[in-house]
Image (cartoon, rainbow, N blue to C red; front, side):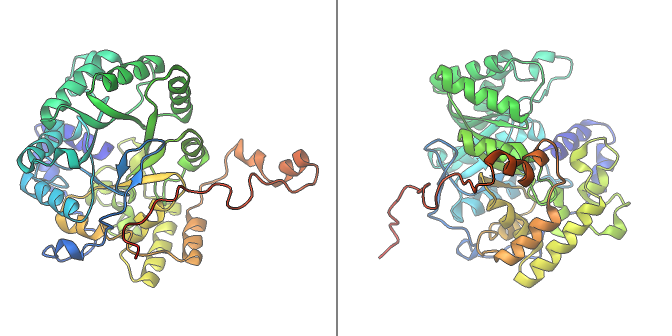
Amino acid sequence: MWTVLLRDLSYRLSNAGTLHSKLGSLDIASSDSRRKPEDIAMARDDYYTLGRSGLRVSRLALGAMTFGRGEGWYTDEPSARSMIDCYLEAGGNFIDTADAYTGGVSEQIIGQYLRDKRNRDRIVLATKFSHNQHPGDPNAGGNHRKNIYRAVDTSLTRLQTDYIDLYLLHTWDRVTPVEEVARALDDLVRAGKLRYVGLSDVPAWYAARYQTLAELTRLENVCTLQMEYSLTERHVEYEFVPLAIELGMSIMVWSPLASGLLTGKYRRESQKSNDGRLGMMQNTGLAAFDKFTERNWQIVAELESVSRQLNRPMAQVAINWVANQPAVGSVVLGASKLNQLQDTLQSLDFDIPPELRARLNQVSAPPPQFPYTFFQGPVQRMLQGGTYLHDKPPGYYAAPHLEDPRSP
């Protein structure tokens, strides 16, 4: 997310041409862009409900934050339309964008595509608000009611639609009361402009307060949390994963490839160069781009070894791993080229054996943190008086039985 927002800002500066000319391609793996849609492995008929809602979505969503221009890792409109075609033909139905992506051009491209194809109702369309696109106007950004109403109408116009399926707060602004946000979004649901609401990049306590408030006052509940999650970024497992499970909010994953690090394109010996997205964004002060660490190089090495054993590209294995983590409802696939999307759409076409998954879990395990270290074995034994306590017996949580129409 931050990559595109910052790159979009630099595009507007006078030296943007020089800066973008240094950007290389983001090929994830070699691929034949002429492959037929039926050769791209993504279950056409498998959809899952998002959080505690009835909204049916694909496990792999199409991320549109690169849609808008043809430089660097941006994607021009013809290429973007080809990607949407490919995604829909492969069975996908979930497209994710934001009002700030490429200054609104991403929304415009999607809106024109849906108008031309006349398939709006087939698509689950997600967009976001929060980021200010009008310098000098403090009310043109943030999470407050005035900006929410302005932003939603602007997005509806760009998207050429009269409703948004999933509307997310993009980034917590630290000052707007959660009650104001919840009431404003609920009013827009009641007005028919929104179908569902979500949160992205907020503290766990904020999400918990929002959901509890919504439940108690009968406002529209949050059905999803969009968070960064990957083999290199697993801090969401401490708070957000149990929060999502307990309060009915599926996690939508952004940056499952750690800004390209988990594709194998970066090497330890070249980490000081300015090549690629991570190279260009070094020393920006943003932790999201601080990927060249000893821990991450160890993760990359183990991922490469596991991928070799599976005979799969590293990107597919990394996406498969995160897609099958607890509480994950959908993974947002970002791409700037069609062949990248074709490759990553095959990420769920195989299983990672338990022993190989265990290796990835071990090398990427987040460091222990208080107070979670205090909840481990010794203290638990003190609480339970030496007995063996379990939550519920096996089979207690039975999933709804839905008849598979493909069964004989």
